[in-house]
Length: 119
Image (cartoon, rainbow, N blue to C red):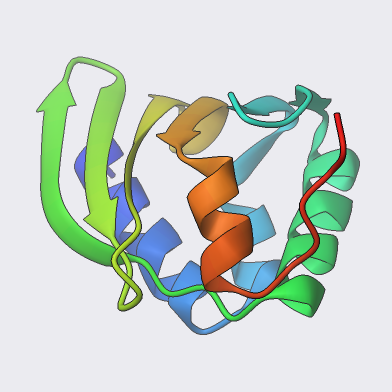
């Protein structure tokens, strides 16, 4: 599958909160770096990250654009609450090897009524 097709599958699984389906898309040694959070390394750690995130907020990813360049797919997204962001996915052998996301964490916390850290 192309990187764009992998990301489309990722969005479908994300929106269904289908963690097992999400994890099927990741390489065992994948790295997920949401720049507002610490880097998460390895498939098991990424799974735990998703479990925690889905437990704290209802998240929906609406695709605005997906661009593809070689082994990379770039996702521009929004959610129903007005948050916007983008994600970069490096796909090697049909698996996400590296993912980096850019979004406003303060806006996310406020929109979902979550506590804002003191520091």
